[in-house]
Image 1 (cartoon, chains in turn purple, green):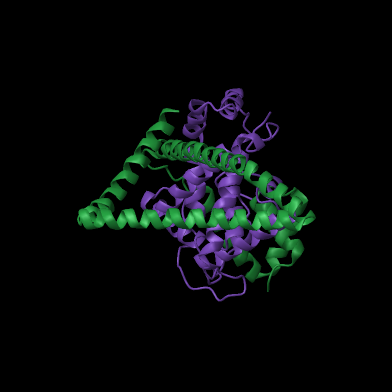
Image 2 (spheres, rainbow over the protein chains, first blue to last red):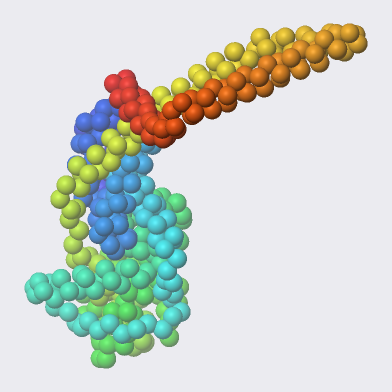
Length: 203
Length: 181
């Protein structure tokens, strides 16, 4: 069996899952220790706030434990767990009833240089990461989930569609719009004199 | 000028490193004709680069322990809920069992009463007798309470003090019993 992110699923994980289904809490502890980082990062990137991310991560594990008997071993356990966490976080975000950014809205300026050098300067990189999280926080929940699952977990469009219970084309569209929104926020004015060839060097 | 569907797809594929050489050439040629889309693609690439280098957020220390504590707390409360639901079900079953003979008698009396006027009279008399007995019992209880009150004026205060204490003791005993089970 292969993990959705491409790595093989350790049979030990499945053994722990089976034992946890039988009520073995120690086996479930192993799963918690193994996946706490992934689940927490997902919750943090989606919710943008540490305390709430921790609470959501706890809730996700609790839900996973209570629904272990519904887990299909033919799927990746990590994907299943992240699916629970992301749907829970999206629900939380929707309950906040914040006015999210729309593709048609005028975008405020947040200036970062277009021709950033490679990440040699750690301070700049950190600042950019913070800025990126701030921008992520303004994306609608569905867009944000697609971006996080794509960039932090390296899932394919089909896998993201499966996790978020939607279609591959919807995910493609969400990702393009999300990137567009983020790009416009990062650098609202078109770069002058930008040439085509250098931009495609890494494409 | 916004990118059309085809250009969007090409840009998306370029970001995902999925462009064939032909598609790449097509995108090149298109971007050469449009400064606005060149700028848009530059912004998309910038976002892509930033997202690709964004770090994983480290879980706070002790998160796993807090998750496990919350889990066992949740399971414990589920266990506590189970015996109390069981006790309630048993209690209701006992009450129903106790009421069965009474219901049987009342049912038989009603069936007899429907058939004869004298039986109906007996039924009414019996109901009145039961009600009178109940009223008398309540009356004597009130009288006894009044007598106690006259003899010991401090009794009501003592009772009101003892009730919460007794309830607390009962609750603790019940909880200990459930924890042991």
